[in-house]
Image 1 (cartoon, rainbow, N blue to C red):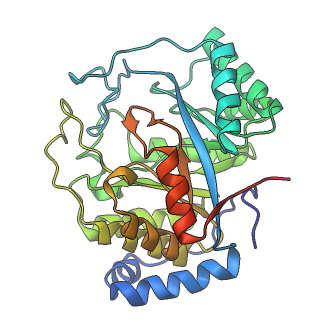
Image 2 (cartoon, rainbow, N blue to C red):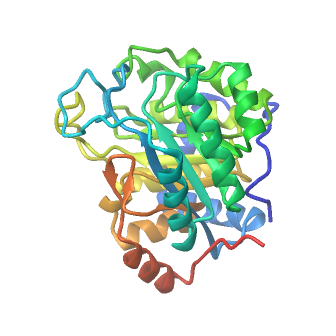
Length: 323
């Protein structure tokens, strides 16, 4: 069984796009069976890692990500909030730990990190949360190498920076930064010795071949953690009328990710509220072994803790407990 805290490493080979398209197109139950077998070789299938995410700075983001309620370019119900006080964040982290989370993720709606008092405050947040015995994760937008090193020195374990979708579809979703901008930040994170958390969002109007592009890129990056999100259409965003993705495509993507990156932790993230218990069970069988707990995922609702506990009980799952 692999540790969830291992640093991600660069893969030596890239699967072909056509091979990943074929993988995603396999009969679903065969794909899940094979993924479940690989999952059991590298992970305890009964254990699910639980993270909690807090928006430490909400809204007023200059980016134009078409799925996001926090963009200043769209008219949504999200009210901008300034960067939270350190004590507020520490209190939320303590509450998360007592609620069963072992990793605490802090998200700021920035295009990128700017050096100065606010970044210094985030570094203090990381250090204080780390001191509680929680794993730390942050998603703050683009970073340079020096900033990544400062985050590592503060005690950051994971940095989340999603690719969102395949390269060929990316400009249909985001125009204010490029795919290569994202890859550059991930390179800085890797060079600093921080675990990479990187995944994507399904249901952005892409087809299966685009999802294969995303998985091909992730197979090379080999993140330590891969969040698989399903779009939650938000009124006021360009993707508010996006067609809902069938649950089976989420299961397929998780299963293919498990086969391509056997040791990674796969987090069933945004959109979990829209999945039935049966669909979630297939996701766990196919290799998902992490979830977000708590009331919200940045600005989207999350399943009630009591319902998570009931589902875990039905499936014989248990939260990861660190020594």
